[in-house]
Length: 64
Image (cartoon, rainbow, N blue to C red; front, side, top):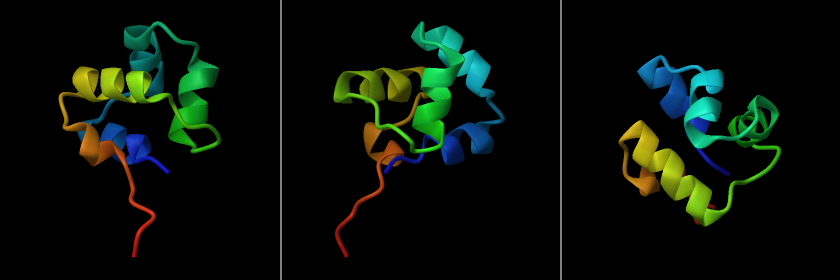
């Protein structure tokens, strides 16, 4: 699971803007945001760089 949706909402950033910055389709980014698919680690790192956050802020731990 990832927290891309929450970070985008906190920063007031649209998925279309992120898709453009990543060079990926809106549908691909929407899949990441809705947690239908998980981005590869390289893509997650690129998203973190674009959003200027630590990559750890984009990940939800499954450990309890």
